[in-house]
Length: 275
Length: 300
Image (cartoon, rainbow over all chains, first blue to last red; front, side, top):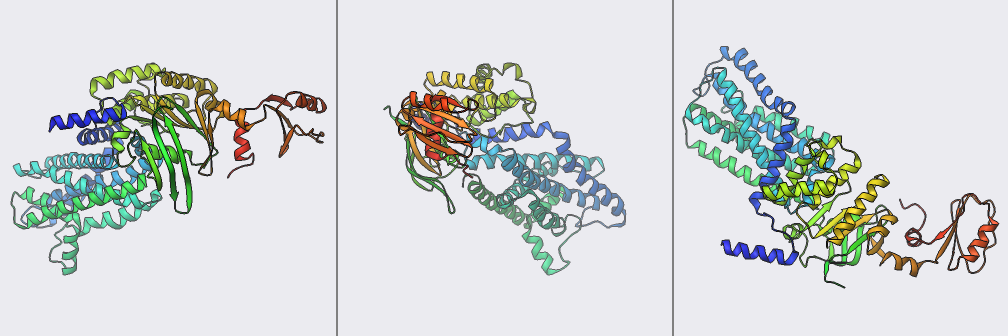
């Protein structure tokens, strides 16, 4: 296999006379991911404040304000119930914001993708690398929010170590959804329809603040359709350390949404960027 | 002619009804510098973007290093460097980080990246600015950084889209000097420009484009010789027109008059009859060829 790759590589250089470059997919994804991390680091404090502070405000307002009056939900104290929910939503927000406003600015104003098009990067690598970055943000911010809620007295168990992975998957999934939306959007204001019309209502339909099951059959169906529900359910199961077969369905739905949205996002961005 | 590195046949790009590039035939030989000249909207940038797979072609054939753009994007672009018309540097980062990140896109290993960054900063006289933020640089420095960036992967073909538009004459000449040096070292260069002077200073062949079509192609000196009378008398704001001899071709655009002639003497005589201010007698240049074929009026 290695010899075959070397021969191909020699053939490539014979055709173009180019020097030896690492053009493998993993290197390319790493290059794009690295760029986003470097640029994000420059504005870390301004950028990282909302995804940490907002869930924290929700948490303190609701868990401390409302919590004492509420019974335990689904076998967990309300404080833990809410903490496990907002971890998933913070990963959702950080993913969706990055690939709506962030991607649009890079696409139209900063022309970042243009600069990438001048290299051997494939469009699929450019945007997969970007989604790996939103997954990284989902991972990091869900871990931070988990740590803070723990400091406020939410009890953790060893399974909670897997919660940031749910955050990473959520970041990737909503990053891909944001890219799909971004591929259609002509002016930056249009994102408000998506954020207020789709992302914010997901708070409600995914059972972040209260159990949605059993309120109304229609809500039951909707809650199973919206992808955030599955992330919230998984995060909650990890917090409880108790699993049911329904969680396999949550895992499957999350994977299915992620793969489908990834495929659509790459295809759409290919069309938007190269035409 | 040496083997072509880029070859287009009946190459066409449509955007809906608009035909941006219209059945164009062209080629670029190894080691050659070809300049594409044309008014805004002539299709120059679209043509360049098809070469490095940033725009998909609608019809026709295009081969780069014998490979097909879009299908072989990776293999082609591993040997191509691109300098864009618009600044697309990462302005939040410093000069060196911009190069490092691009080196990662290109797939250079760390040691090679370090060496290339130092060499190219030196080449573009940016070594002292390595730690400066991009947004603190002047326009000329940004453009030099974009050229350095395009050269990181040691390309065999360099594509420049209006490399010196908006820059002062000193920077422009410095950039030309670097490009000529790269060309001497064997680099093939494809560039678009508005500046006739630039085309004349750099290009082995000039290709004039207008409304998506190639109108004329050849070495600049030959184009001028074949297409134009040798001398031009140019005057502005004439209140009455002199009588023009048969050997002189006369053209009037707005308040300007142009008189063309193969010999200098009739134009000298004509100049004697005109008020001295605003009258220039000169050799025909590439700009005259350009105007002859694309018209002197506005193109919007």
